[in-house]
Length: 77
Image (cartoon, rainbow, N blue to C red; front, top):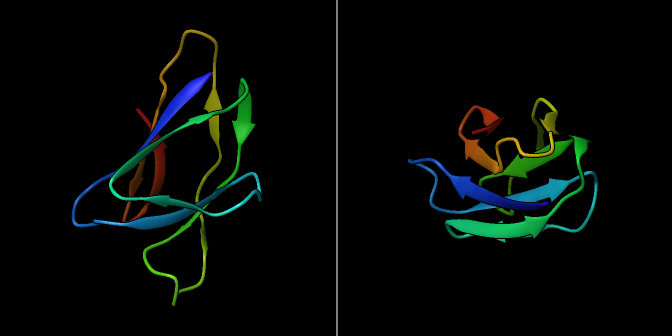
Protein backbone atom coordinates (compact mmCIF):
# COMPACT_ATOMS: atom_id res chain seq x y z
CA UNK A 1 0.00 0.00 0.00
CA UNK A 2 1.25 3.51 -0.78
CA UNK A 3 1.96 5.44 2.41
CA UNK A 4 2.85 9.11 2.85
CA UNK A 5 5.45 9.97 5.47
CA UNK A 6 5.00 13.59 6.54
CA UNK A 7 6.55 15.92 9.10
CA UNK A 8 4.78 18.08 11.63
CA UNK A 9 6.20 21.49 12.55
CA UNK A 10 8.58 22.43 14.07
CA UNK A 11 10.37 19.57 12.25
CA UNK A 12 11.67 20.53 8.81
CA UNK A 13 13.68 17.38 8.14
CA UNK A 14 13.80 13.90 9.68
CA UNK A 15 15.72 10.71 9.08
CA UNK A 16 13.48 7.65 9.31
CA UNK A 17 13.94 3.88 9.34
CA UNK A 18 10.98 1.57 8.87
CA UNK A 19 11.30 -2.02 10.11
CA UNK A 20 15.07 -1.55 10.47
CA UNK A 21 15.50 -0.85 6.75
CA UNK A 22 17.56 1.81 5.05
CA UNK A 23 17.46 5.40 6.20
CA UNK A 24 14.94 7.66 4.43
CA UNK A 25 15.15 11.45 4.42
CA UNK A 26 11.90 13.41 4.81
CA UNK A 27 12.07 17.01 3.57
CA UNK A 28 9.10 17.43 4.36
CA UNK A 29 7.46 14.27 2.95
CA UNK A 30 8.05 11.03 1.11
CA UNK A 31 5.88 8.26 -0.32
CA UNK A 32 6.80 4.63 0.27
CA UNK A 33 5.28 1.22 -0.37
CA UNK A 34 4.52 -0.75 2.83
CA UNK A 35 2.66 -3.98 3.41
CA UNK A 36 -0.47 -4.34 5.48
CA UNK A 37 0.42 -5.06 9.11
CA UNK A 38 2.47 -3.62 11.96
CA UNK A 39 5.63 -1.64 11.30
CA UNK A 40 8.32 -0.29 13.62
CA UNK A 41 9.34 3.33 13.09
CA UNK A 42 12.62 4.88 14.21
CA UNK A 43 13.45 8.52 13.51
CA UNK A 44 15.87 11.33 14.34
CA UNK A 45 15.78 15.06 13.62
CA UNK A 46 19.43 15.22 12.49
CA UNK A 47 22.22 12.85 11.50
CA UNK A 48 24.12 13.83 14.66
CA UNK A 49 21.41 12.55 17.01
CA UNK A 50 20.57 8.92 17.85
CA UNK A 51 17.45 7.24 16.48
CA UNK A 52 14.34 7.28 18.68
CA UNK A 53 11.97 4.30 18.64
CA UNK A 54 8.31 5.28 18.14
CA UNK A 55 5.26 3.20 18.91
CA UNK A 56 4.54 0.68 16.13
CA UNK A 57 1.96 1.66 13.52
CA UNK A 58 -0.51 -0.84 12.07
CA UNK A 59 -1.69 -0.44 8.49
CA UNK A 60 -5.03 -1.97 7.50
CA UNK A 61 -6.49 -2.52 4.05
CA UNK A 62 -8.58 0.53 3.13
CA UNK A 63 -7.37 2.32 6.28
CA UNK A 64 -5.37 5.46 6.96
CA UNK A 65 -2.26 5.85 4.84
CA UNK A 66 -0.29 8.78 6.29
CA UNK A 67 2.38 8.38 8.95
CA UNK A 68 3.08 11.74 10.60
CA UNK A 69 6.48 12.21 12.25
CA UNK A 70 6.22 14.64 15.17
CA UNK A 71 8.70 15.72 17.82
CA UNK A 72 7.07 13.10 20.11
CA UNK A 73 7.11 10.20 17.62
CA UNK A 74 5.20 8.70 14.72
CA UNK A 75 1.43 8.40 14.45
CA UNK A 76 -0.99 7.09 11.84
CA UNK A 77 -3.42 9.62 10.36
